[in-house]
Length: 499
Image (tube, rainbow, N blue to C red; front, side):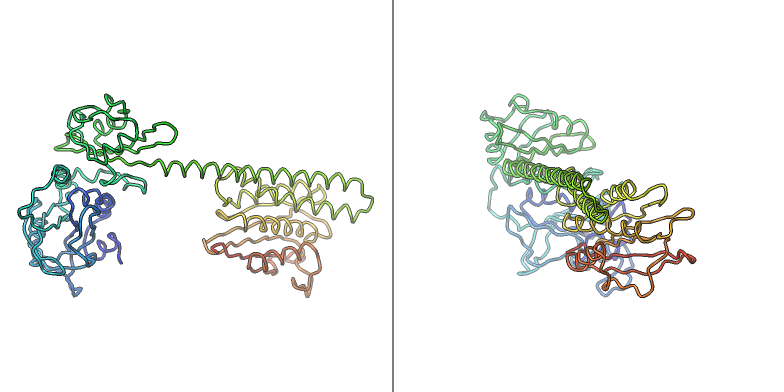
């Protein structure tokens, strides 16, 4: 199904600001559907008809396209079919066409989509910067002989106040992002405030939410401050004519979210709709997640400390060895352990299991420079590109692999010493699907007949096993483009990162 923006771009001449206004209306109109107990649909004038031909003629005679539809959670829907993307002729929805042309609220009857029964249609012009860019319709059954209760009357009255705000361009609020997942809805609890910030009406669920935070007095006619509730958010909503949110905590276990939506008439705040929701369980889960996250970070910190302890013990052991070959083996083991410790150290400072791999590569390069480079071997290392965030299951083996490749460059790329400058580049790239790491040197290159599969060196065996077996990636060695006798070598690793 095409999105609102895609439909608008394909069938209308609306610009980005107008489309953004419609998107913000659709992002918040669940509130409107619940208040009016009815289906809502959003129409815009179409520049094409249902055959795809260019539409011409006066605005009130041009086709209409449905770019949005929502069903209420407080009542039954009249429209079982999905209307989004449907192009209708103006004579099928004459009141919508006339409303779009005139820019005034009007009401009439149309036919439903299933039983073809009469449907009462309230057409509300959607105004943006003084121009009508669409029509919001409220679709409901005609009420015959039924008297609505106080709750329904109050909700519908508030909906009509929002309708006037839509018609005057005062709703949705400029720059307002749609409600979050935890934002309260009408069914969670409602309080209606008058122009003096006093409670004019509280729904049964709204009263229950007040009870949850310790307010048991009759709230009607009272200010929130008089009920013992903070007034910072409500004053912000009234003075700035913008929605505001506040969380009320009662003890350590109860948290109620209050969202204040100002009701504006001709630029003046005449009241506010307050939505309340008990989010105690959500906050309890948040606390559990924070505790779990802190525990995981502490585990990574302790693993890093343990690895560093092992590294120190190996160094002490290495100093007691007489064999040069044994000392070199211990030093290589120390570097491998330190490369893994770097990953755990970074994870101990991050939330979650992902780590910025560039923050691993930088200290790895410094470690190689400090441990392997000497005045007789002045190699300059540099890093290019960005690897993005990687899960620890990829970052840990890749840290070992990069360490082995850098050590391999230092040990084998410049066997006869270095004349002039020697440069090694670590190049990173991540397109969201594959991680690419290249280690590029300007050394003597690979020997004739070199094959990674036939290599017996421990370092390259580790690289091959980790990349191809554990990470399901690939590794390639090929000659660089430098002039003899130092053409250089390019080692490229490609590893999938999206599972």
